[in-house]
Image (cartoon, rainbow, N blue to C red; front, side):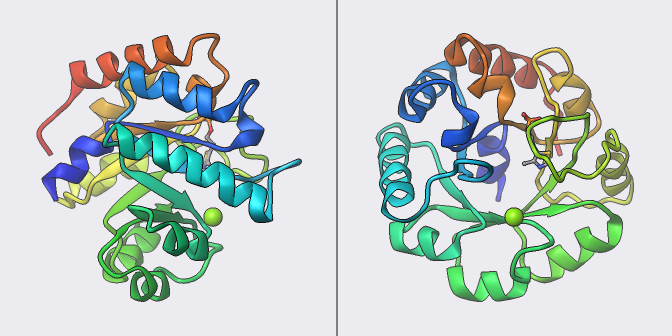
Length: 217
Ligand code: TZP
Ligand code: MG
């Protein structure tokens, strides 16, 4: 899926709790700046639930559709199916990837992995791409594991795995190129865009950084 590699370049993840202003505005600006994929991740203190969550997801999906940006849902498989999202992203504490794959058919399936064992299991279960991190320390995810740099990304590439990979955790315009140089196909960020005074500028610079180090993997 070479197309997926292209889509993973600048993967913006967010929900209402990550934004200082209307998430619709933040997403619209980031799309103008050049994000290539979006994940709706409605989590944390004050996260929306029920119909409010659904309505926000629907609005964000519709912005993505207008701009041909793939719309991925974090964790909530039912929501992804109800909206006919382009895919889902799950972690190790969610339903097993094999079960999720059964439920979503050929939609995109992303899995967060932290070790070679988890990566191989995810592959076997039908993952389309890996989210690997936290690469750098992050304040955004309260229960994030300790940051481990790019070692797992490098190990997977060294061993010849060509599965699409995005790095996650503490990635900024300053360090994005390190993640790409390690062998990632893209970077995923929350606060680097959602907390930026200009999500447009942040997305634009991230895209430029990613494209300047891109390798053929
Ligand atoms: N998973 C690992 S780190 C992280 C997630 C969801 C948070 C990333 O947020 P930020 O603001 O880009 O560090
Ligand atoms: Mg999860």
